[in-house]
Length: 409
Image (cartoon, rainbow, N blue to C red):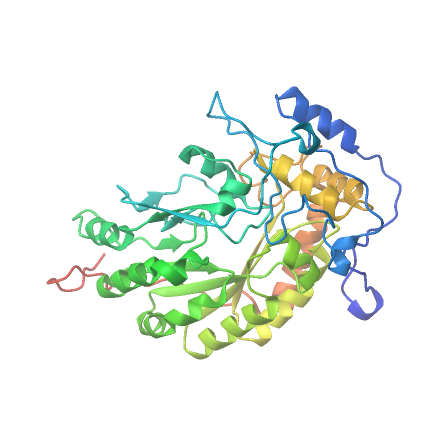
């Protein structure tokens, strides 16, 4: 990991890793693990150089450009299903890059209580399930299995649209026992993914929150949020909204394959600048930090965000839970064949020899010297750029139901 106290002396090309000698888990070992749980193993052909950085990607007809996952993993809840996990194993299976499907439904609930102790939110609401952004590392992929789909390509191609989301929120807020606890938008899947351009459900949810003076936090990696600047500005004047923009890398070649349908880092900075200028409290989320891929960009991201008006920040360390372990492994070895073993080992080194950790307080930050160095960078540069310096919280004191005066808590 680079020491960025003097960035000019510590430049490293994306994907470039330290050459210290450490034992690594081979691709053969992880493939054996896949087979042990009944998965067929997709064959990954060695590539010449890191073609992802030259814009060539996998360079073959099997690679789905514009998608993060490259195949559908097995749904652990389904006993009988057909999945294509061994590319050369089925001669007559033709599978193109299927267009995104929007599956409309009338949901029963929209606000969910968050039981996880280390995610920084008490309640969340998600108008869409699945996410077309296709971030390969997304922890929400596993949730798609509860809907009967795969955490792989299905997560990106089959988007469940909760058409009655605003009506459900209104009904929820009318409950006499609701105490105006802040609710997080995009606590699971992204509320400003491309489906929002058609359905405008996030806009509807914000309008309901504005009417009730219900405080809400937003996490986004899409510039479509600017379409709602008018309502966000109204809410900001009442102190009932704040937003974070997720930035993982300024390297466009990396972003295009890791988060294929998100907006560019330059556009994300524009979002921070424009909304902060409009009075909205803005922050930056750096997550996940992946050793050997993007962890060296933390200082640059924090400085750029601060220069554009961000006043608070957060980060997560990569962890690969459930099916994401296999999807990320496949993606990593296809795009970075020269460095994949090293990156994989660094992730294992940060999770007690595994790539996932379920322990509260540790799973989102990692452990060991690599994770500790990331944590030290975060603390150092957060202080340098005056991030998280103010004491601030969303205003719950002016919540009111239509026809009622504000409720004091």
